Amino acid sequence: MNTTYIIDKEIGYGTRPPFNPDKKYPEIGGNIGEGIGDNRIYDILRRIFVYKKMDEANFGTVNWNPFGEFIKPGDRVVLKPNWVTEIRGRKYYQEQLITHPSVIRVVLDYVIIALKGKGDITICDAPMQYSSFSALVKESYLEEILNNYSLPKEISLKYMDLRQEEVELDETRSQIIKRTRLEGDPLGYTEIDLGDKSYLEELCIENTNIRFAVSDYDEEITRTNQRRGIHKYLIPNTILSSDVFINLPKMKTHRRTGITGAMKNLIGINGSKAYLVHYSKGSPNEMGDEYQNYTTMKGIASYVDYKLKPYIPNVIWKIIRYFWMIYKTSVQKKAKSGQSTDLSFMTSNGCWPGNRTIWRTIFDLNMILLLADKSGELKTTRQRKYLGIVDGIVGMEGEGPIKGDPRDTGTIIMGDDPVSLDACMADLMGFDIEKIPSVSNVRNINKKFSFSSYNMKNDYQNVTNDKISRPFNPPMTWKGHLEKNSE
Image (cartoon, rainbow, N blue to C red; front, side):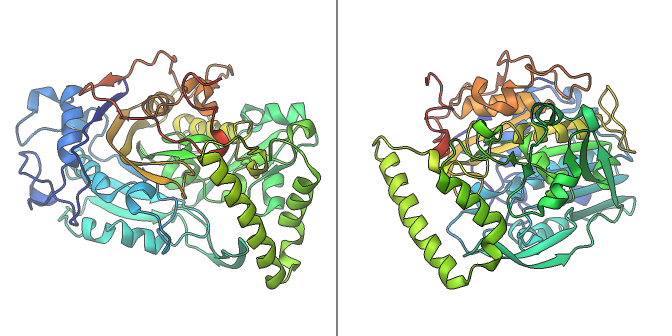
């Protein structure tokens, strides 16, 4: 299946749970419910299905089953939205932050049709550690959606938090103050050690003293599970036991990876975030990618953040953060106004184009999802069916994946290759795909266990021939790097 996209600037999200279709479609009814709502996402996805000639013979009838070519009765199907975090009372909009529930509803309906009364459906994610899963469920109106169905007993439909732990964060200090153990995946977890098959191993060979890290997670766990010859991931068995994986990412920029789409969305299939290395300590001169240039202040700040922060009194810490925010804001204002300014001071925690670590972690997870069998053993052929549908009706630009600005594009992208999906998304956003590490490096590393067949030919199919009006604004530290025709 070639990657296909549609841009319809008149399309918006459904606003009335449970997000019924805006008109009567012959295939929608029965145990799915026949109510009419305002969800025009049905129209945009149906247009893609028709364009791709999915179950062409039955289109327009009650028997139309566009997902029938890859979902069979009795299959275990996983839907993986982007549930990075809930709104949490901040000035962010749900539409740009998480996969919109009106998109999930449409996909879910066609999965139910394909299962023909028998199978297992799980909607799941492992959001950020301090996120409230119950709040995400509420903001996604999952109960309203699920209660809309009258499914036979042979179909199991549920949602699940894949994390093993949820924490409470003191946001003024960015410090964990409480940990709560979660039930997690009822099927348990499998620890998969990729060993020298990991894309991270090359960095360990280059630098035998490498220190992998993840912000706000236990460094001891990270370095125990990610080091020379050992690269472990904790994968929920619900993911490994699935026959079909449907990836539902958002179209967003990202401060560490440039973009976050289909590939980066798999960060949420790991049960413990401490296993997921995001960068290596130090500057490139120290064979690390934590920040761009080493300065004494950078070194001190990194040490304080990781070693001394728990012991600094609140009053002093708030004063430090207050002056830091004043300085950071002033530099950002200069940059936004077009003034020449040095943004290298903002390249902390791997948030810059020189991060050589995070895209390797992303590659490892995509390799596991597509090539690991139900026991976690890597094979050379795909072990489960994969479909990606990128929600770009409203995307995010700027300081993504959380603090960016909303961007209305009316875009949906569909395909079965994660790299092709991300390449298409980046291209539509106005970025040079050669400068997206998680896309361009696919062809630069020759691996026996290849999870993508994307050939970098930009052969995406356009349903409507429309374009996004202007390029997305990249994250501050990626300006001048991601844009097309930039030096």
